[in-house]
Image (cartoon, rainbow, N blue to C red; front, side):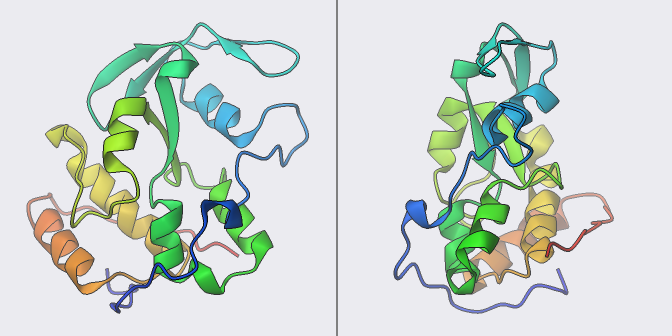
Length: 181
């Protein structure tokens, strides 16, 4: 966590529409959401010519559930768009925010999870939300730190405290970061 600056955050000016997401960057007919679902499927779904997915099963690490059918899943921005905005993305260009919202280069950035778990998380950081499944919490926290560091985002004081406390109960884990941009 040494690479993360601690400072107050501001939601001023945030609108989800400032992060163009679920684009089809590689022009293969599948948007980012579908690409994540295809990559994370436990049992592969069938994709038609328009990349509509049928069948398949997925594992939701947040709540330790297996789900069948893509409609039961959300693709979560591990660090939510609003939290990224609060933490520095407000100064980014539209292109930088689009790249963040559709990051397929680091598999920790986007994760397929149950819609219920994602909606309970909403735009919260680890000071107000931790995955209900205890077996995933250490991974969640280390991925959070890696994602925030990858994008040179800040953490606020309560988030910092929550990360320190949460990671203290995790075994020593190396956090490897691939910087974006």
